[in-house]
Length: 410
Ligand code: PLP
Image 1 (cartoon, rainbow, N blue to C red):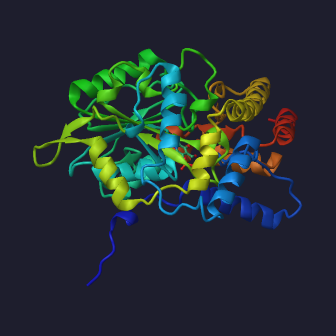
Image 2 (cartoon, helix red, strand yellow):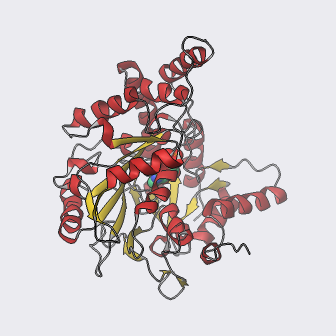
């Protein structure tokens, strides 16, 4: 008799963004003329840049011609893209990453979830808190998290590393042994970053204890501070303890186009549950080839265009547009008297909620200003008391939102 997994029953409430959507819907039902400004979900709003569009048009034409049509491509991604990534994202920063350490996929979200297929049976994971909810929920679904413990404010088997104003949003090393640590920098949701020296502490811990770092740098394009590393592999020793996840979603507006990649160094060797030494690169290669049939040629040609001089300049212009929005939001919120974090090397602004109840602040902002943000509580226990605003709206809406906040009666 078929039985479904009981793990899904352990998930907490609704996925954060469904709850937000439900509350907006209820508000709009009562206030049909409300002019709502959405600064909640971290989706981009600017269209694909011209270099990408023209590369994809050309690829469509190739797919429509007998001579240049392509069927299945290599599961790991075409060599042209893997080589361009190695050169453009790594060699250009003095980091040695080979093309066969890069696995092109249809999203960092899928990759950070699927990577657990490589975990041994009793793997203990640590996450920063607040956290991109996917890291936690996929572990719950896999049966690795145990039950939710309301007193702890988290799942019994997950180790949480709080990041708050008090510690400058710098996580401490886990106090109890862990096997995997998820790190996301620039951080979603706090918009904060870590320096090379701060990351080195985690790299040293992982190498010393045989742990694995899962480093999500989906927002690296927004970094402007020269002291903030774009890749974990800029930190010495990371190639023996880290996997990096990157995405074209935020860097090049590919949230609806879908293309990302994971870097799994060939130097990553661990023992498996049977005691044999295994290569994570070989395992991920096997997994990728077995489960995945590759990103569309048309999409990969679009991604490739972001590495041309023209494409790169256009992509950076878009990133700068969002970062100017971030600057406007941050300055506006500070002027309004809020304590504000992030927003300098990331498109997220993390503000301290007066009164401390982030869902109450969400409801209040929606009701009085018709502005939607994301309550920090949705990102974990240590997110309560904070609120995330994104810089992905249009310039006009960003300015209107700030004006509304500045005419606040608070
Ligand atoms: N990683 C982080 C930290 C994110 O915030 C997001 C999307 O919001 C993703 C990954 C998802 O990336 P992708 O669109 O490539 O699945």
